[in-house]
Structure formats: C-alpha cells, structure tokens
Image (tube, rainbow, N blue to C red):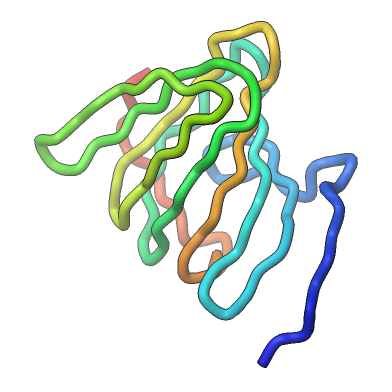
Length: 126
C-alpha cells in the first residue's frame, strides 16, 4: 500500500519531453503517473510513439491540434480547454499550439513512465 501524496504544480518545468514540450512532473502510483505538459504559442512538438505506455490527456488551456495515427487510421483533432483524448500504445502523435496562449494539458501515463528510451521518433504530420 502506498502512502498519501500531495503536490502543488511546480512553478517551472522539470524536464523537456522527447517531443519537445515542457513537463512538470506531478504524482504517481503503481498503475500510472501524472504530468502537466506545456507547448508555447506557435510551437509544434516532435512526432513520437511510445514503446510500452498509453496515455490519457486532458487539455487545460490554449488552442491547438493533435495528430494521431495507427497504421492506416489517421486523424487531426482540434484541442482546447476541456477536451480529453487517448493515445493508445504504439500510436504516432504530434501536437501544436495555434493560439496566442500556451497549450497546456494534464496527462496520465499507464503504466508509469519508464524513462528516456520510452518515446521514439516517427515521421510527423507537421
């Protein structure tokens, strides 16, 4: 059994994700971890896929687009505050901020993020 944990959103990012977004690490349990992602206005992430994890993203602020591809199935969705989406295992994805404010999202990674070799580069949409 895990102890209770409590953490405020850090003022500055902890790391730069493999896709180029700024990440503030939040909390985790045995089944998954949570992080806050931010992409600056006009910025486009690097296209990646994950080897072993799946994610659920919930957008908090900003406006952007998220591209996802699994084999022949491909889509681009408009993202903004209140939208939630999934990134299933092996999905190629890329996102960009098209508004004047940073695009921010909370993401849950399941199982927990294993480390630097998890994400690998893929050909992107943008």
